[in-house]
Image (tube, rainbow over all chains, first blue to last red):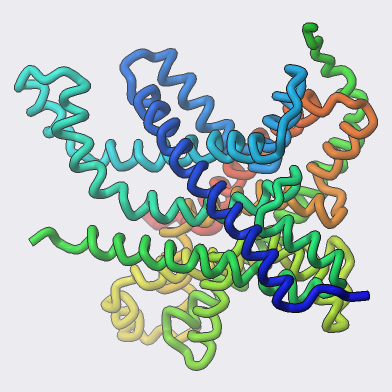
Length: 217
Length: 223
């Protein structure tokens, strides 16, 4: 009855893990780009833009990722378009990541002393020039560690997309557990898969944190 | 073909929503109390390097923080019965929440304990305070005070995370949402309403934790 060998289970989980990696990278790149736009809006001098960005961030940080995925999934379906799970997953995770990344990066930009803004303003730099040449190069240095740290949250977040039917690592695991009646082994392997993906990232983030927090000279 | 929104189709299920909110809050509250207790224990063991528990807690923290909550939940609910440990959906959900929050709060509280200057503990010793007194008043209380905002955020994150407990049929708020949208066929409206309820819960729980922090963690000092 049981045609799945341990090797079959591992091979299938491997395929699932590839989708997890693909989705994580997509969400990180798109979420990062959207997060940068959001950061600009959040720090803009136009009050309505600032408020809109704040409301967006508040909403996506204050609601479960699962609800966001459901809203994207059923929201697009309202337009009469058939939504493939991968699209809803990618879009949902992008929205989710952009809110967190924008907030993380805002903290980094605000950590730059006010004097830097004033000095660059006195050199007649425009806001964009100040950002490009003075603020961002310094803020980026502080931002690296928490950004890598957040990538772990993205990888773990992809597991929730299994619920809307995206066949990544967790969904593959659920299907295999049902097919093989060996949930202990299958979910053990699934957990191990995430650990292998996330542990190096966590470790790297902690390493960067120590490196950048050390005195400069 | 324009879609017309109908939120009354959600409003008529207010009883289910209220019950869902109740269960979500209960799961969060129980998980927070037990999870932070476990985290405090782990933090002390880790900060004072009590062997062999320090290494065990270290392993536990890394395992939990580098795997998704939903996988932990599935492992406990679907995987553990293979070892003869059969759990109900609520037992599994609570255990998963406690184990998850325990790992994060171990690290958060440990950071607080390690930030206590050695001199303060020595000073307390020179005032003839007992070990228990030193631990309570000089180590734990200031440490919790320092990390309370981080701990509060983590509790809110865990509360939002409990929405995946609907997948093992624990009847919390997301389970209610799934039930309602299967009845009224108004999925989008239902999930918007429930998302807004979660948003209100996050704001409320954060405010409540702030209050608790001010009342119990930050003790008023004589002027």
